[in-house]
Image (cartoon, rainbow, N blue to C red; front, side, top):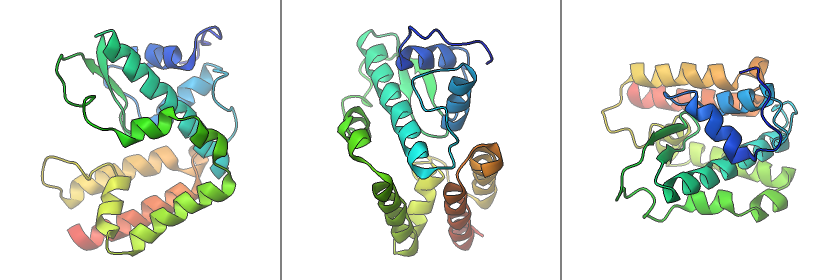
Length: 198
């Protein structure tokens, strides 16, 4: 998308416009790139290689996505599925349980104190806690969560995991604006999953 986004619109409106044009959904990285290409002023237009810039961009995006999901649900227009690998507008279905259950991620991203109070040291701690889980007894679960496969309904196999690995590497490679640290995490997760599924 090369058209400039209307600067009078808020970020949730920009996201709605982009997601309507992509019925199959978009990955987080694709959404960020489209917002930048549209000259959206609501997210930092800086390289994502810096960990703090990456965190802030991610947080602002997910804050806006949860606002949009609440708005669309309240107006009974759509359900917004939110995950880093696929953000997609789905048809509204009354009585859906997704929004009735306690959602700690929603609470986290809608609290702007987390954005304001998180500094570079905190981002380092978040990454370190991820690595601790990777090296501890929960390494398989942590790796599956990173690949967004922890709640996969079908039985997993190495082919599915490798396919997801290639998607993630493509999205997060530093040559495409991704983070070296994120790519290292993806590679480490793949090593772990190959041990369990290879």
